[in-house]
Image (cartoon, rainbow, N blue to C red; front, side, top):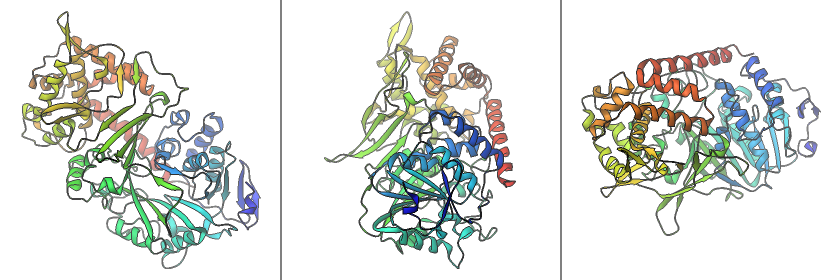
Length: 573
């Protein structure tokens, strides 16, 4: 691309294929010199720079490196269909995570970044993409010779007051964006919600690292950064863009596991999906003031998930938007898997009515599966009810609930398992296609057990009791943090509480069952994510021996990483 045919200002060629506005004063924004030095080392030595690079993901060591290297960044936009021929401007490209995705999906991308160090890192991330031009310059000081079809403003609008003067720099930025677009152009904005649910739960404001600052109106730190609630953001956008569509990334736009359309979010069907995407505090480890999952269900019941979503993804245009479409009700992505096992799940509306869920592998044919575990595509009808996992998790919030009362919803499931099992030499075995028939995938429909999302096939039979342990272990891991649970669940030895729960639906677990569980679970973890088998065995044994100390150790590890990350941000240069 001839960049001077797009930008009228005088540019100077910098290192790493980056252009620099002449006489531009560098922005001071940074994650810290050590963080950027590490990122440069990773990018310079990487062979796979793609937006879904497993090689880069393996180099994540703290929150800053996760933000720049995780494939989840591109998942924000992966659910959209784009016309490749559209010309693109990215404002505030940072270190190039989103830029990389744009360069893979558009033929012409101009990416602006005010910090020269970050611009150079973005240049390194896109060094093999001829479609991308990185320019170090503030967008409001550039004279563009052409208008753009799409402008991407991902995590940038909230900083407008830092580089645009005037009484309302946020309005000024949106006005500039509208002037930079063609008549049928589209603006894509991702931004945190000032009234995100996680902030009411005690999570610190993403930019400032303090609790409740945004909820109270940013009076403690005026003029630095600010986000908006849905009503204000929509009003600001509609001033210049009559056509506005909202989408909702969960847990937020930074590292989304799913993106949901307004239609689906407000349909009353999204609670089960949203409840499984727990929010994070990027300023360090913290605990919610209340149970996040049950709160999500109450908000869903009252049609309030949109106004309390942690982030917004808004697509805005002056006219009918062309070349940009979201072709499903919702889209979800697998996390923490090797490329061979990566999946994309779409919630789709049938032409004849109803909703179904389609899961497809996206790892590519070049990836080899294990001889022990197979990943299958699936297609299921959407079940408009709560999974067994959700039912028992909600019951467990009652401090006085007995184990029998909590796990009563599991009875149909256990009947189903043993009906599908066979007895061999006195031991009950079940087909390997049921390896993931655990409570999150189990529903009761018209009194019958229904298993969905049967993507995994273990190539061999599994002890039925091992599958019971898997389901209980998954439940305990999902509920080990957050609000206090029933006193009946307070047993500290993991093995004992699992045996006690299993007894409530008539299953007696033996020592050999736990040995086989550890072997199966560590094998699956190694195959799917590449995690160390010895480490997984160690942690499973620790969990079975004493749950609280393992949980405390994990929190200490997380806190240590977050503290280091926080200090780097505080003393950034």
